[in-house]
Image (cartoon, rainbow, N blue to C red; front, side, top):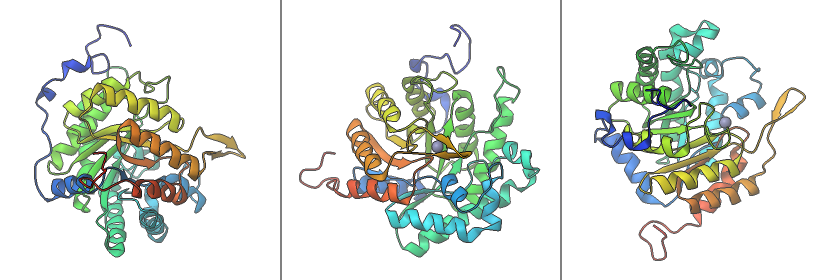
Length: 335
Ligand SMILES: [Zn+2]
């Protein structure tokens, strides 16, 4: 970071006191469902990895996972079902790379609407079949391009790209939008702006990846992230992916100290990936992941899940721990 550059990366957190005029979520049924979920229990369990599960079901490295929403809907639904059975209360659609910028690498840029809408419908169907009140989160990942002036993707075009994806997810019936694995404040800001433009009534969870000495790859600190993202109207903020739960625990503590009132999210990888026979292997087992989840809860995380390398077994162990929490408002409740 070069001091004095006038872009979002170098702006101090207190430069966002009024949110820069960005809209917050519009009240309605979706926001009521979101607030009700938070009100029901102190710790909400999200889901675990989608990519890891698809690879073990035969997805080949380099192929776009989103195509499986059309070619293997039974597999995608089975993965969602296994997370529902593990106790997940917020599940993400199989749409991480479902923006036109990333899909264009596979000549699929014209199928954003179809792939995202279908993904939302698949997950919605599984949640309905399970008869739970789990929420369907429309997953939005990075474009894969670097925004101007460092890179070539214009901010306004990035907003359009994210708006297109969010509109398709909303059309498929998602309850909220989850923007994840971001490194650049400009890009995640564009994603928030795009989502809110087309789906103003959907809550937004916004998480970044702090995998570089406590910062994102683009140099964003946990404090900058939590201040900027909440000021921009995100309803929950935190970290996902990265080098494992210890790293994200430290990030959670720093976010909590900087913004005690924010709804914090921790969705860690199952440790550092190791390359074995050209496959990424993650070593943190379910019991260890659950112990880490307890530490994240104690550090202030309200929404806890897993990212790369986590499986339904990991999430079941984490959910068992959350079930030991007292319901909010009960005697002995920490909240
Ligand atoms: Zn991950």
